[in-house]
Image 1 (cartoon, helix red, strand yellow):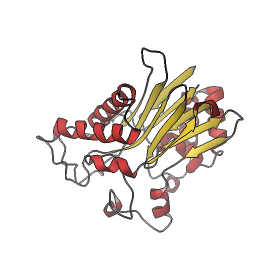
Image 2 (cartoon, one colour):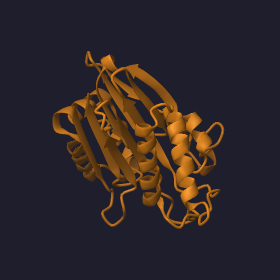
Image 3 (spheres, rainbow, N blue to C red):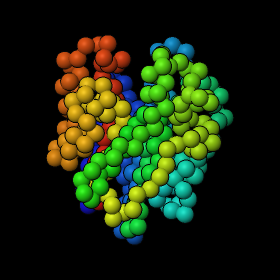
Length: 254
């Protein structure tokens, strides 16, 4: 098995709001991968939280990874629901969890054993799955992209019917995630990317998802992030939104 992870802040003056980690149980059977992209709040308006997004993603990511590994009888949706509840309880008494900008994150979680590879994707981080025959499937929650195609996406669309969903303080949002499973024998490798790394495909069109997975396999996650940074330096601002975004990527060969 080969496992490689990399993450890099978009601005070294600010904490990285992404989270990526892998756990391999002591039994040696299977494993789990969790990747989160914390949602950066606007410069004004606040979040109602005294802790901040990096604190939130670390708490949520750690809880989700633990539940995914230790609670193998639980679906990944229930693992995410439990992790959201646990994280909310950790700051419910000090923070306004009803604030629309309360800390929140996109989610990718993958769990595998000898029989199957389960996945959950919520919001605009990406999961790539390579089959034993080399075909690459991109598992995406495309709700926000469909909204963007219709016009500007406002805060009113966040965690609302007809909008898009992120993991914040409501455990029921776990039921909105894209979920499924592959037979373990059908999967050769997988990768997870926050949109800061996925912009190599989605923003800059440097290649498709299969090309992206090929870069990860040959050069590793840090090389992909380095490629993104190089393209960002030469890109026009209107293509970016942010000049540089926090980026995280994980690659796992099973």
